Length: 73
Image 1 (cartoon, rainbow, N blue to C red):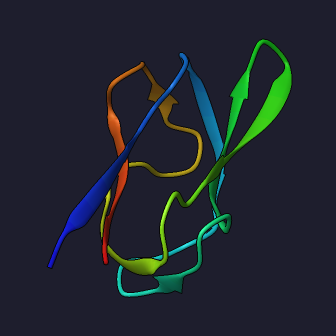
Image 2: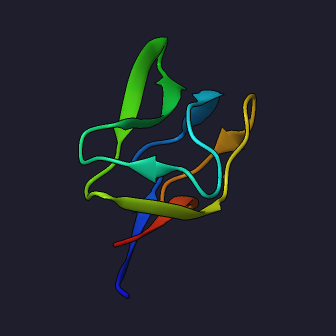
Image 3: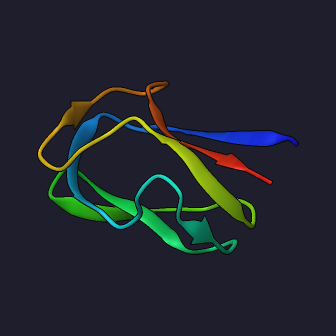
């Protein structure tokens, strides 16, 4: 099966993580919320599939390019 890796687009802090490993997601579902420059940015699933890896947790400070999640589809 193919996988899609979701990476951090901008430096910020993870406010919440809405999925767990093993969860099934639909395209457009919120994976997590990233706060940057006092704005909350929802990070959305780009494909339908199953979350097989999570690379972030709440309150974690992240930089561009770090893995948020991997979805198998």
